[in-house]
Length: 380
Image (cartoon, rainbow, N blue to C red):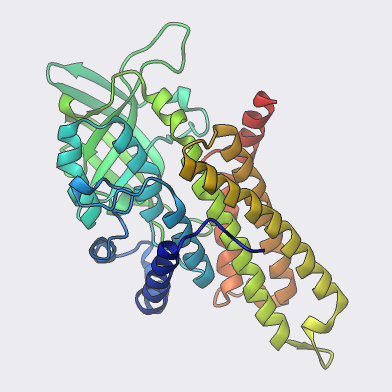
């Protein structure tokens, strides 16, 4: 299917990312997976190449691009090699919109230069033990004492947390009678703050090179100047930025499904069963044909959403639709591709095994498939 969303500039960027992945990621990726994180030096390397600052305004050292197409190129090239950049997508596609939309000029001047260079990596801390999709149940609290907030609580499943220098922490600063969503705020918490601790590295089924941790806050003194946006409006900010987050998950899922088809196509062409190439069997042909048809539909949907995002009119329902459809397609396609690999599909040294393990969480984070269905149904 011919694609029209990318310009020559995007394709030149693709060449850069593909070369970087092959020379500086693929050879080291098993070590990164064993360590459970990407080395911080690699983030500074991404900063040198301008990868982290694409969407950051020029006055802070970025390129000032306003849409997600460069991020989509990165996702496609990472999926092609079945590797990852650790917490980079959270840093550039999830945290950055909150900073650009809500941060004060002083906060932007303090944090964005380091954001661009890779010296200041960021994470967002929303999820708590026992609190997942229901953000209104957040219990981490911050009480105002003069020019300081005193922060207490715990967070879990924090992507990129082991390598982060700055955390956007969603906490409860007040309680609004009859409004569970009111009274939530976002504080910018620096990693070296007394009373703040990064807990254990969580062991996951997939995404082994993407650090995921627990956080704890014990009487952490956060300057009031580190309040992001206005007090009590966090829920509004969070829901307002979910569309781009969900679109980024959708295009990554679509890219992973396409990568699964390609590695499987190569495998079945080389693998012989009963004296014949596996690719000659009708079942193999039909399975791959079904996978291609589904993935083509997903690609058409996600490219249309990328175009809408570039035009500034992507809606939350469109993003939820793309995330639901693309991640469900990813799950089905990768599973069928593992089946075509037979026993080898269950061996971790084969790319399809990594794609399989990494795929499962895409139907959970950024809002579960069930939440996406609720968003869509409400609009209907």
